[in-house]
Length: 341
Image (tube, rainbow, N blue to C red; front, side, top):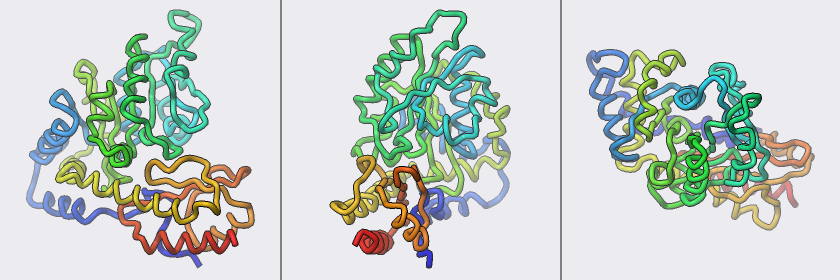
């Protein structure tokens, strides 16, 4: 029998009550469409408070849209994007960046989902060569698809090498909140202060109903954002209901409370199976990647929802969320221990 709580993704979780209350509060009376409302202005103020006065923000429906629009601000028709092979833009967005923007993704194989400066430098040999795609953007995920996080120093090192060669640094921040909560720092410390130029900010995985944001930290890149958002089909008519979700997450550090709880549940899970299962990646956010035998994998799937990360090697992905309870985790630990025994 499948237990009630899913460990398949933080996308499976519901909506945080404070976010739902904010939506309900905004559902009073009329408001001018397409963001010309006070709730959207409040969201923009909240993002400036979190990321710096130069930050401009645009509410969007989903992370793929925010990534595509954000990358589009920085790319010419012959430019390419350096990213890890495991990056969401490379493996989980159905070629959206390539289809919509016509760009080429220059994917780099990594062991833990993280790019290093030497990985970027290794892709720059074709700069100035008219026969080759020109690298123009370095894109990283925070946290990575492997659950690993970039420290502020690691982000800054990538920004330094990118900027030194005329490239921009883009961050897919679908789980930026989890990274900042794990590192014990501000959102700004991992982005603005570290040299990120453009990022997508994830809300849906952290308790929103359905809200992401494009955040532009380099003002000269902002001029086209309104038009690319519209072309990218990410402009909400009743914008207040998207914007208010993001404001709720940024109010009283709800983003941190949600992410810190999800991370704590992942660490509880990892500690509970330590010594019995090998973990493919270190636990640095809200994802745990144990290695199971095929028999154990099949039996666990009869009791719990989770993702198979790499079937040939038996790696599965277990993701916790803001509403995962200790009892949920302990039930999973008990079942995993029984399979190990």
